[in-house]
Length: 231
Image (cartoon, rainbow, N blue to C red; front, side, top):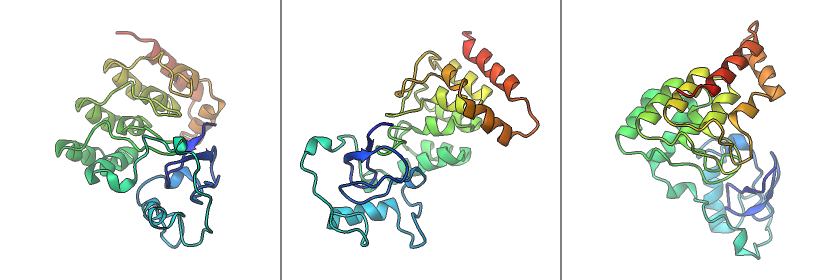
């Protein structure tokens, strides 16, 4: 696993997996709460609140003891941005794309939201709205491509639109991305291509859970054919 940028303080502090704790701010890494205002716990402590608390007090929440101060500023991710530095509509676009809310995505883009905006932290570092939508939301993908979304965008640690579509065996999304210029041979930044993603045993398991009674092998072979088409 890569050295992830802490979502709270922006330092590359050795976070490599879920539930690691940042040694600089005390934030516990959970990919499910890398989003702006998703509560971390019953007290409704969110990433946005944690960032604000860190900037004021040097720790991620009131229950965290004093942490060591970073001694090497080169460990600060230069691309990291606190959530308060994003435009509101840009954050809304990322969340709407992640949920496949096509009408909301279209409205936000129409009002000027940035199609290539991305979070700059954690495992989802540099995931654009198109990467989020390619995880199974075909109509949303079409809208984003219509507004010029880059079909070859790559997350800092993993994922590209094609790899995302392969993860969910979304044949029509793959075809739409390739018509828009996506390169099927281009690996994501973890070195995995869309075709290699189809070899993952977890994909078969995912399809069996998602579509009980279906033939995952047939679905995967359809994906292979779609990735090999060069019309």
